[in-house]
View 1 (tube, rainbow, N blue to C red):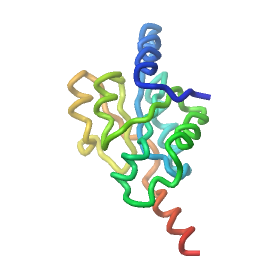
View 2: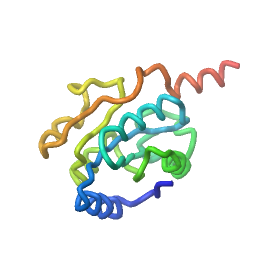
View 3: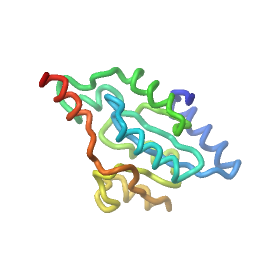
View 4: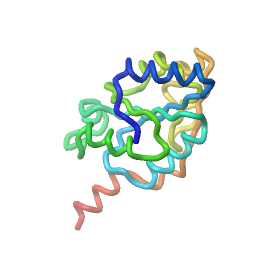
Length: 156
């Protein structure tokens, strides 16, 4: 199981991986109710590099992005679930709308986003290109969402 790390701890782990010749991928998201779309996204991201870092939005940023009533689960619980997945090597919480600060600090070889994006629409793409990384779109079609799951629960 991966550990939840601070950004400083993560930077040290990534530096050690790089020194050992390993490549790094970064994926990010809210992961409020874990579902098969999340699993497929993270497995696709893991296929892009030797190590997978997953950045999980902190509670405040989820409220900012998703609105009142979200997140459903606290950040520590969401991070623990993600850390338990076999495809995940490292987990870090992050504030704000984007992972720009993490990208600039870690400079992962690949920044992975889900199929609700195209390479051209990924907001952090210019940052990734600035240090020579690449952006990959991974996972299955966006047929799953936490919003849809929640609406099913509230409709019954």
